[in-house]
Image 1 (tube, rainbow, N blue to C red):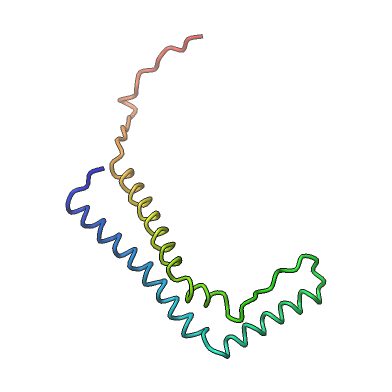
Image 2 (cartoon, rainbow, N blue to C red):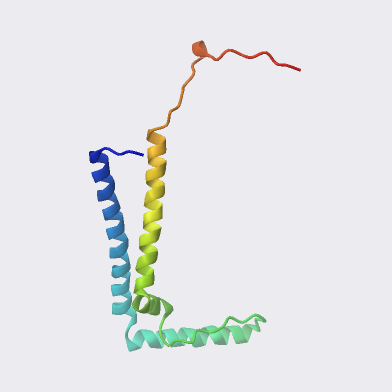
Length: 130
């Protein structure tokens, strides 16, 4: 595929916006999680939820009990605070693959060599052999 300079600049700009948005989204989610969930009151709510879930499982006699969370902090806080590099890499890779797929489909749709045959230009019918 060859792109004109104008289209190449447009693609690079669009890609930069997509990747910038993905990175911004991860950092915004991280800021929200730290501001909202990284305090003693939220950690206490998390412990209460854990205890309530465990009590409900015990009361219902569910034979296949879930393994309880071992952390005193909500999983989303741990994920966004402690695994930022993995989240950023995943967001960038997924955004890149989706963008590349979109460009591939768009190029295929705009550069298709389709022949439209009308009734007066119909192809001759070949005799059927038995």
